[in-house]
Length: 297
Image 1 (tube, one colour):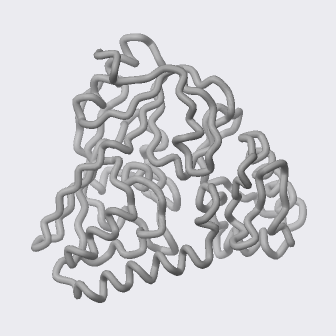
Image 2 (cartoon, helix red, strand yellow):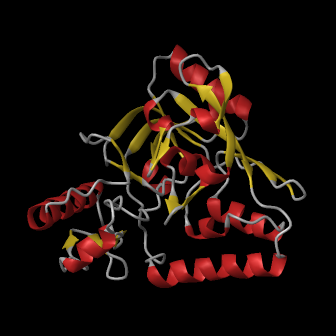
Image 3 (cartoon, helix red, strand yellow):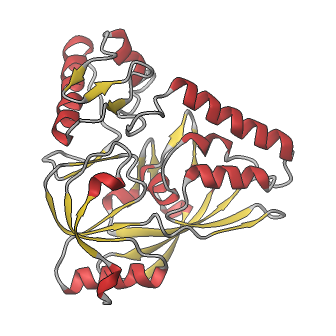
């Protein structure tokens, strides 16, 4: 493989939205499917572990040396829209706000909610990201993947993917998402869609700490309850460990006040879990993926 396709000893804190992370032994940002496939082949041939990240918005990477290859999909951002049929084909690195705004401008309805989620399409499918009862699984037709072991390219239809709350079967198989085909309702009112999308973003920025580095939501909502409400009820807003703080705007956000280490953030997550379990008898399950920690993901 051409050496310029990846770098060595890369600081991953630049590739996570909470701005912490370790050093990747090898790091690559493929710009097309061929480069993606070549990287996976290289990792297999050289017996290197291969881990894939998107926008790093739901990711806590320990501040250690991360062995193997880390692939970031953010440069895979091809997006094709058929306004008449509502069919959308998008590569894994397309950012959700970009997708949401493009849908609205093309009169396609059903993606307005996604404007405030700072993640990629691939990450959103992998995590089954969403808000309230809405998620991209609803609009999904199929997903194109590469098998990390065989490099075989496959198209998997929605009926063959197991989606649950903040879970997809991609979390437990060896398939890397490279693109997806979706369907949104065509012929919507353009002005209304653009207005709704703008208002959704405004609401998010007014109620969530977008001005500081964070993950987005840290914990999954327990059944018939809200993680933010539970944490808030316990008076934990503003609680800090080192440079990591439970946001005073939204209790299910942890923010990095410029100097947080991955250890600070991990400890804060653990302390919240322990306090909630002791007081409320509820185990809060992290939504955040963790790399380089001894933690059952």
